[in-house]
Image 1: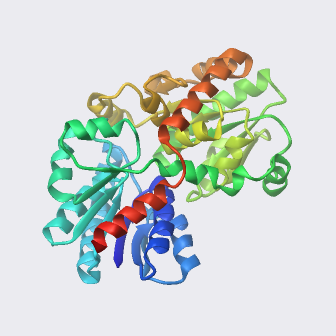
Image 2: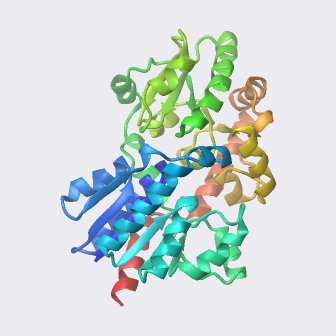
Image 3: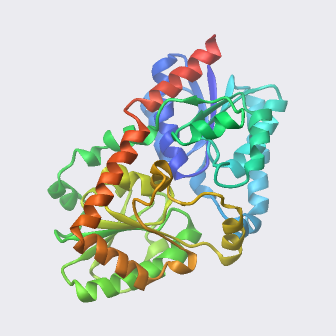
Amino acid sequence: MRYYIIAGEASGDLHGSNLMKGLYAEDSQADIRFWGGPMMDGVYHGKQKGTGLVKDYREGAVMGLWEVLKNGNSLLRNVRRCKEDILSWKPDVVILIDYPGFNFRIAEFAHKAGFKVYYYIAPKVWASREGRIRKLKAYVDKLFIVFPFEKPYFQERGVPFVYAGNPLVDAVDQSPAMQEGRAAFLSRTGVPDKPWIALLAGSRGFEISHMMPILMDFADRWHGLHPDYHFVVAAAPERTLEDYSQYLGERDYVHVVFGETYGALRNAEAAVINSGTASLEAALIGTPQVVGYRLNPVSAAVMLKMIKVKYVSLANLIIDRPAFRELIQNELTAKALMEEMDRIVEDAAYRERMLKDYADVREQLGGAGASAAVARSMVESLTA
C-alpha cells in the first residue's frame, strides 16, 4: 500500500512517527511518502524503504490569525505543491494528522480527486470552529480520535470514528529519557546538579518571542529569592540557539537544551509550559506545572471569541477540572508565575493533589499500543 501522510508541526511529527512504525509492522509492502519532520524521517531511514520525506514542517509552521495572514502566500504555495504531489504519486490513502488549516484543504481536494482520506488526531472542532464538522463528514472516509471526551462529542453529531487510546502514552513511556537516570542526563547535557524549573516556550517563533521575555523575568525574580534554583529551557528540536539567545543575556542560571524535553521535565522540580502537547506530556511524566500562553493581540482577540471549552490544556479537558492553573494572555505575568510556582514548590498538599489528578488523566487515556492499533485498523480497512 502507498500511504501519503501529512503532519505540519512537532506534535504531528511525533504521532506520525509512531503511526509509521505501526504501518511498517502491519504492512510489509508499505510505501510511505510524507510531509513531516525529523522523527518521521528517522523512522523512514530506519526502514530504508519507501519514498520518504517531501517537505520538512520546520520550514514554515505557523499558527494564529496574524501569523497566517503574514505567511499566506507561502501556505498557498505549499498547498498547491502538496496537491500536485498527491496527484503525481497516486497513493492508496491520504492520512492527515491534525494541522487543520492546511489539512482541511487537502482533505477536500483529495476526496474530490478520488483518493481515500483518513484523518488521524481529529481537528479540535470541539474547541472552536464547529462548522468544520460538515467538512469532516463530507471529505473524510475515516476519523481517528485520541481523547476520551471526543467520543460522546462526535457520537452526538453523527460523525463515525475509531478510538484506540492516546498515542502519547506510548511516546512518553517508551522514551529513552524515561529510562535514563538523572546523572546520565546531567553528564550528557552539561546541566549542573541543581534543582531546576523547566521552561517550555513553545516551538513556533512567535510563541518564543511572546513567552521568553516573561519567562526570563520570572527566572530573575525566582532566582533572586531561591539562588539554588536554576532553569532549563527545553528548546524545540527544530529551533536554533539564536531563537533564544537574544532573551538569555548573561544569566548563568539559565540553560538551553535541544530535543531533551522529556529529560528536562522528568528531572525538574516543576515546569512552566506553553500549553499544547507538552502540557499533556508533563502530566504523563508527572511534573507539576503551570501553563501560560500568549498570542499576538489580534490573534488572541479572535481566538478567545471562538473557543468554546473551559480549559486550553488537554489534561484539564480530559478530567474536566483544573489539575493545574492556566494563565492566558494578560493573566500571564512574572508575578502570577511567582505566586503559582511558590504554591507548587511549597504547598505539599497542592502538589500531591495535582499528581493525583495526573493519575486520573493517565487512567482515562487508556493503556499502551494506541499507535499500533490505529495502524492496524487503517491497514485492515484498506485491504478489506
